[in-house]
Image (cartoon, rainbow, N blue to C red; front, side, top):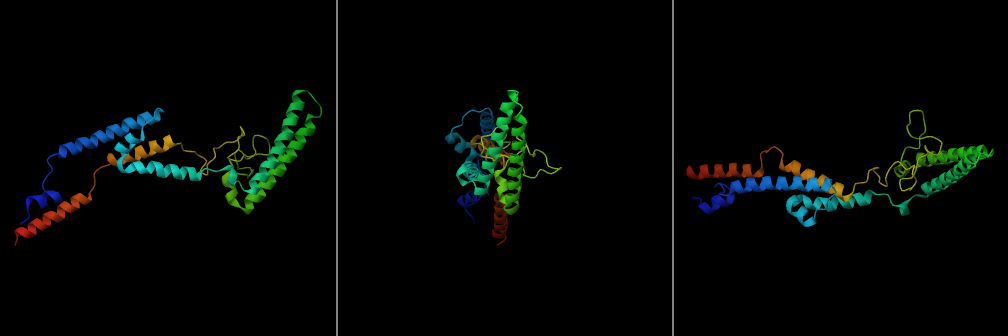
Length: 227
């Protein structure tokens, strides 16, 4: 006959502090909700506190932060084709700046500089389109598609419409330096992981391994009684 200790270890005997476990579960949810509110408000949350209440999810923060760092584009890794495009774009921007300066002073030759700028922008974009056709991965470095067709929005042959390199500090850069175009901060990642933990904790209960173990143990007990 199975002894009481075996029954308790296998979970056949109800645990006396089951209500405490339920309270702990509710407390964890409440604490994670408080942590989430603090993070959204821009407040600092100590790693010790995150580790305590995130539990098995805590390691996700470091892992996802490392992945985010890897996905960020680094200027030193810039391909030669992109560097050449930046050189041409800089030349075109310089011609435009000269045109703007001359125009602001009422100079008649401002139009000459505008024309040079237009030609320089067109050549720069043609170069970029050619390079991207040879290596589509280059487009990851751009804040918008180099295609300036009638169905394309945001790309045109002028100062405001030219594609900018994601790592550029230009005010016309429409993205951040990331392959995805969206840079997550460490705080963003912490919030996402907290949300994930909360979703798991508040999910509807399903058949668990513990329930399966209980069923198997009941079968064993019935088999022993029938002997």
